Image (cartoon, rainbow, N blue to C red; front, side, top):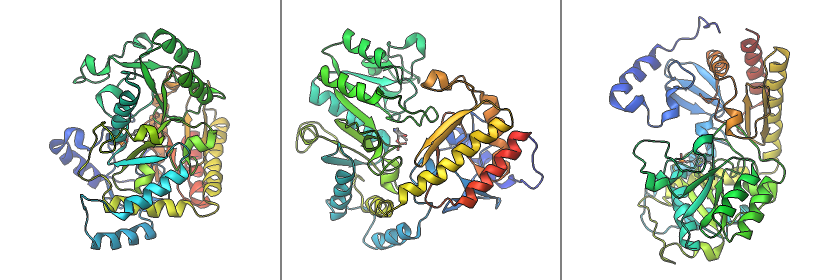
Length: 432
Ligand SMILES: *Cc1c(COP(=O)(O)O)cnc(C)c1O
């Protein structure tokens, strides 16, 4: 791919170089560092609607949306106005506020499985807590997760386990003791038989199954017909809980998340990203009898100084209000379909093997000729080609997630014109 002469990122480079002496890898979260696509990250100056401006003044159409929260577009004027009002009343109470009731009611009304909810500060926290709750409620220690599903960085969930160590629960990161992951069993996404075998081998010790009902953290991978339904039946048969990690999919692939979209109701659900409207929030919720285990209603301890803070609640409430407007998800589906179909069509015309798709405002494309049903399939895609594609798009003002193993996100702020511009850029890049 050829560097366009007008693309200059000298300020970004200076700032990022300085950052590398100040913070590990120069970032506050690893994937921001562009390690998997090469080159240096651009440093953002501001975001608005569907756009990003970097510190060199370049403008981009954004398909990362701060990794999911920006479904209404960045810095939506109504969210910003609500935050201004909330700010006047203070930034943190550390005591109950009516805003928590409002957002809790909205979440309970929207998400089929949720009868009660606890707010936390991140998706990681929500997943950590939900594992503790699964164990507390069932009195069993083991959990099943799927290779390629991300549930935050808590010790017992940092297991992806390649095929050789599939069920051994070996940790992915140094510093995670074997004891922390010894109770984590790993299965292959979309492989119901594999999950069944794990249950047969451990009939009385598995507390439950946690998964991304639609995967976004090994690229965009959808559940095969019957997979979610099968997990629902298996968990019921063995007295285990089914947990949907909807931190990414919640309020994104449908207002009520994947559970609404696919009509499968889990026992517990984790949320984050969209429900914080761009501020740090996570949540977990589910059946009332299970949630009643959580302190102070019950004995399972979990707490947070800033949990349910008024700014995050305000941004979340306003964001969900905007999403409730008629036609929202139809619009998101329409523009995302245009983008996803367009990219696949261009790949075909320019002779690149590619597969992909979308659900509502979530999409993905792998550079591979085979269909992708799980993480192992995803890993067969042409990563070098993705890196060149990513760079070519960046230089043409299109900001994609800097990894083949990330889903893409659209927002209500993306226009048909933005999609057209994106497809024109893709055509140029893929023709080279
Ligand atoms: C982002 C994400 C998390 C972690 O959320 P953080 O807020 O980054 O801690 C957990 N699960 C899924 C499915 C996610 O996409």
